[in-house]
Image 1 (tube, rainbow, N blue to C red):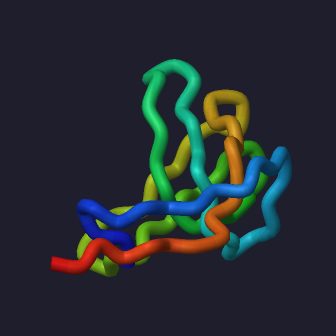
Image 2 (spheres, rainbow, N blue to C red):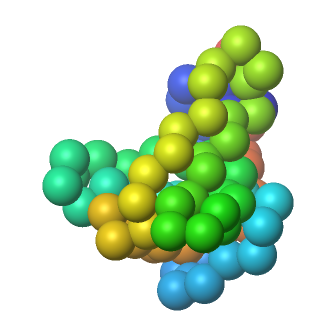
Length: 77
């Protein structure tokens, strides 16, 4: 539920619990994404808030947790 123009507040963290909203960094791809985190064996599932989008499954060794989302400031206008 984060829109273009919103400001996301991220608290640095090295670990997350299942269901927490995180900032994940894909090491090989060099990109980041905001998603709900779920640990599933050797993989992590990154679940979008938008039900029309698919989950992303990635090997744990390719994903770094850069922080937990602690707030969103909505862009108005």
